[in-house]
Length: 157
Image 1 (cartoon, one colour):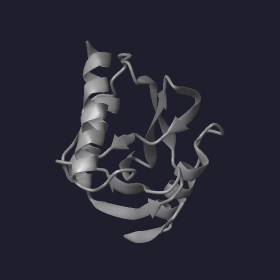
Image 2: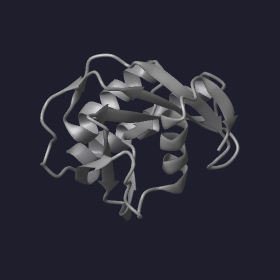
Image 3: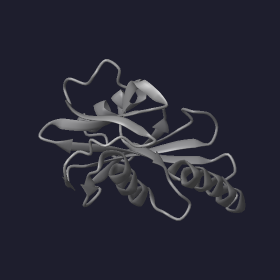
């Protein structure tokens, strides 16, 4: 049932994008969740050898912040009480029309989810100054920008 629901959601996202004149435009969000100099990372079933920041698509009816909060809950089990800011919005990394907004929050609550689902196979905390070798290079840059104090940047990735 979960895969069927996911398929319908993806299909609806593209249908809405057509009606909104956004065909080919793929908005996404990634969230840097931090506590005690640690960042929460995830591994997806479809890319098991790579750690990434939690995140995903922004549905046409939700804001980037709403999507980040939803994705954090779905992928990690944590409740994000508030998004504290935006590192930046980056376009073009996956082809024409792609865009990802990177947000951050330390205002989070809950235990890390250890249950497997159809998307996430692993979740783990890593020190911000000791990220895993298998960490996605673009997400590594997002963390570097966050640590350097970059805010509201608009650039290509």
